[in-house]
Image (cartoon, rainbow, N blue to C red; front, top):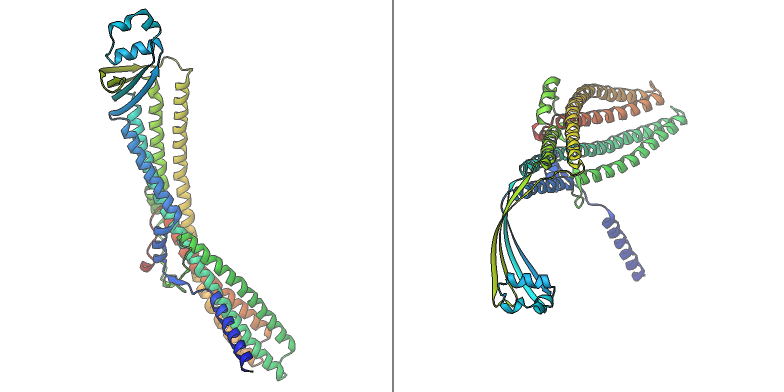
Amino acid sequence: MLRPAITLLLVALFSVAARAGDTPASPRRISLDDAIAIALRDNRTLKAAGFGSEAARDQIGVARGAMIPRLDAGENVSYTNNPVQVFSDLLLQQDFSQKDFTLDQLNHPGFLSNFQSQVRLSFPLFEGGRLIAAYRAAGFAADAERWQVVQTRQSVEFAVIQSYYSAVLAEQRVAVVDRALGAARAHLAQAQDLFAHGMVVNSDVLRTNVLAGTFEQQRIEADSQLGIAWASLAHALGDEDERLAPLEKPAELDAAISPPSQLAGLVVCAAAGRPEINIADSRMKQAQQAVTIARADYLPTVEVAGVYENDTERFARAGNNEALLVTGRLNLFNGLATQSKVDAAQADLSRARVLADDLRHSVALEVETAYRRLVAAQQGLGVARRDNAYAESALKILEDRYGSGLATNVTVLDAQTAREQADMGLVGAQVSVAIDRAALNLAIGVEPEPASGR
């Protein structure tokens, strides 16, 4: 008898251990400021933008390198009996002799090897303004990428704020449903007791059971939405390895509401601070330099180069020569390709100007939209707080009256539903204000306010 008992005990212990292993660890609670700091460190989109900016800065060095002297080394090796090549290589090796003038030697030379080493120093004297324009264009491109990083950072910060408060909302929804479910079950117990004493009919018990079942379904859905919200927050942070969750009820949600600044001033602030506008301005300046580069094909190019050459057959004796070369080139006709390049560059410039102008109007619209949404959200929060107080008082009164037989079960159930809706409305309004405030900051191009300072 002892052995089966021990076996059952071990099985029970292993089952408990297995269930404990399947239970997910509690998440680590972080503040909004901590969440933003994690995202600025780990978010992959922001990291990619940083690499893009670094690559654009390196392109400035490429453009700069085209304007300074260039030093090249080259090596050519030949082994031939081509009469002309052999004759030329003997001269270059400075090893030509009388016997090499015989007709048979000139017409039928033997194989000759030649190791030709060259060092060439070249410098572009004039490129029609192409090189300096390319250098400036690279600088404007780097500016655009630098502002792109700023834009990406602000977008990531907003995404974190949105995900953070969405997770808060999801968790608060679970708490609201739990509270409503607890109240429904308490009312069910009350209805069952009254029914047992013959004070109410059975339909009161059945209707209350239905309401409790509805809350149970909502609890299942709320729990699923909470898991999704936590996963979305982890992705926005760029840290899926650790279970992170927002504070259960951030203090900033209950902070005093400060009205936004005047709309006109916010539009002016956005015109100066939005990174997209700075990106558009940099792209427009880059397009202006592209026009200069295209027009440079109409002008001549001049290059000066110095060459040192060493030619040898067996590395024992070598011929040396030096040269100073000045090379000029001017295209006289290329099938109007240059004109087409200029027209295309000017069209790109016109397009950049139109897009920059349209962007300024779009930014003004975004600021106004975000402003009005925040104002509406703040007003809605005041209404939600008032309705929440009304719903709480009404439910308490009706529950007391139902116990005294002065209120129907239906009115109590309706009050419980209204209380749940009011609770969710209040949490949703608080979260809407927080997100809409962040959206307004994003629209005007400023960093989000620290949560601790709200």
